[in-house]
Length: 375
Image (cartoon, rainbow, N blue to C red; front, side, top):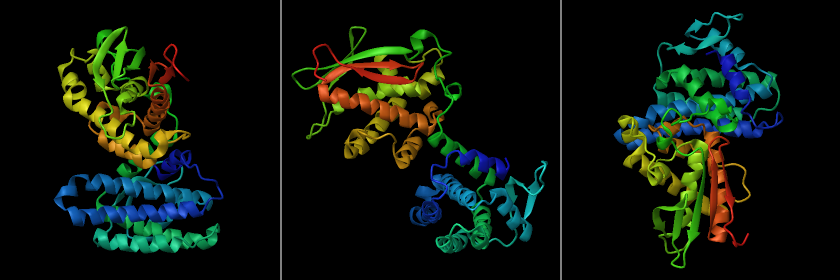
């Protein structure tokens, strides 16, 4: 991968105005702080954090580079050009890609000699990012500070041991998965090769009713499924209708071990898939994600009036489901599932029941009132 290819790929995810310089500089400073915080956590937690340390370093260095690219874009400087200028002036050995412009190095930068410890480099990177906070939309004045920052950034990459190719590829997947609407043909369908009785239904209607005892009941094809649910909390909040979120996951993500278990559509023809993706632990993950999102949603009026979901929440979900098939779903699709699911949930809560209509082919979920229900 070329730096120029990275720059083109992430440019589509830049939602700031071309004239917005301050949020870019603040974002760059913040991401450098996040890299430093990751190193701090390793000192504090030691072995308890070592397993996720490199993954977090790679992610934060990728986020830092995103803001460097955004800054270059506003200064009308090519990201690959400024990296090439730094690499040409320092003690670096690099592979040169065979393309029309040999100045553009491939993603892998080979270690320089006499590397300083990562903490020392990060302190200098923080200093360089602070100096960039004062730049204006003037490439002539900003470029020397930017080149100085990039030189230390390269040192940080080398001192951390993070492969640049991994940093670039991971950041592209992260930001495009979050900000760009995926093509339908690129989205995963986890059970299309299984027999119909082992698939989540392509379309479905689930009736949810509430009885005088305050418990909700599910009915599919006229048959009760699952157990009656209450809110199980002192302050009623509607969680008795939380199966809506599993139905949203099924319709939009094509994933819900909980829904599979409710309708007995587990993929038993492939025991390894059944054990790893459809059984107890996967169901716990499905329920855990639902409960975690709900705890955040309660503080946000259940996402009413919102057309987006916090990036931090989406990243937490991504970490939650790591190791399961649903981790293939881009963050944009998760956001869609959350917003559609909570739209149905709010109506379900307002009316103490209703009908959930799911369509996997369209990746949609919607609400229909029960007969005689208030709207």
